[in-house]
Length: 164
Image 1 (tube, rainbow, N blue to C red):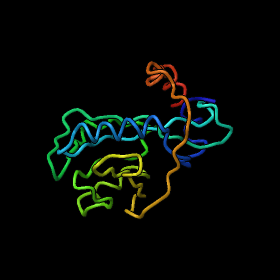
Image 2: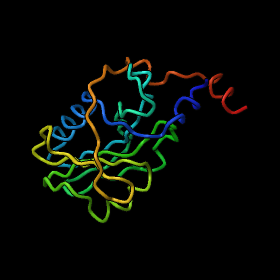
Image 3: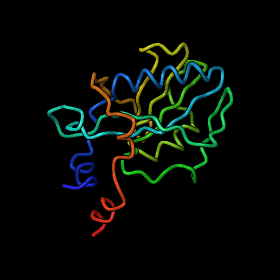
């Protein structure tokens, strides 16, 4: 089974790794009073030692050139990688409001889960939403994350094989 087959075997998002949530919370707090924004990436649950099909959010990718201020974060869409593991977005609301703004809803079409983190950035100060802006449940899963060098764990030969 190739990389892409494994990733698309199940598109169900099982949850977010606890370490990944902690990273996002800390990053949002460090950005305060400006908004923080990143793109969410997933790893196949079986690669994390879970006996389930599906994906676990394991990475937050910060896009170069993202512009932030106290009321918005703007990502240059041409800088977002066309990544098969991209699952959605995470951003903060320094005012602590855990619901999407009209501007947020316009960006939620890319990906299936979107997380809003609010001040004061505690483990309970976040909420997940689907692509339509409806609240959704996202479990926090205690897994050991893959090593950083596994972030780009495929070669051109892997890609060529999948495209045949």
